Image (tube, rainbow, N blue to C red):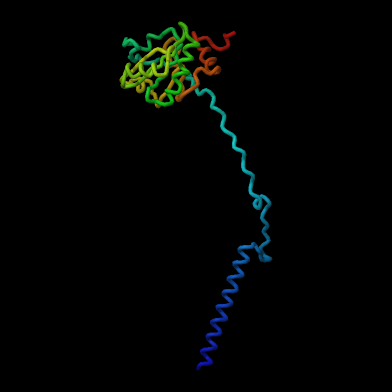
Length: 219
């Protein structure tokens, strides 16, 4: 009986040793890529060599993002005040090409572009053009006047829509939003977001609409 027990133990040990050996062999084959004769696939050189890292190229600055309308659209008779507290409407600017900028003193992109709008007004100043920077600050004239003084804005007039009706009446989805308005008080197009308004290509773009003269009529 003892011999039978020993024999069974030997068989179990032999089987365990065989399993362990096969497992070790399988691990070696897996780790070191040794293939069986039936495995005839060969990795391509592209898979063996990692692709070179693509050189990063910064995106160029987007072009001036003005969207022109197919047909001019009349502006609503919205009421707002100037720096002296006088009530105005868009009708008061008929006869001029107007760049109507909707902004607020708490809007960081607006703050960044206001000096450029001031320079644009200086460059194109005259009876045929005006930048109308219309603030929608609830703080009214005092808040806007303090802002102009702080940033040294001299050429821009002060215009305030304290109730922010312009945002609704003009379908403004975000500020700053800027509308180009012809001398008949009709919107020609608009852009949302800050711009470098005194940049040469933008100034040229606006000049072509002064007095409704097409660019082709310019010398």
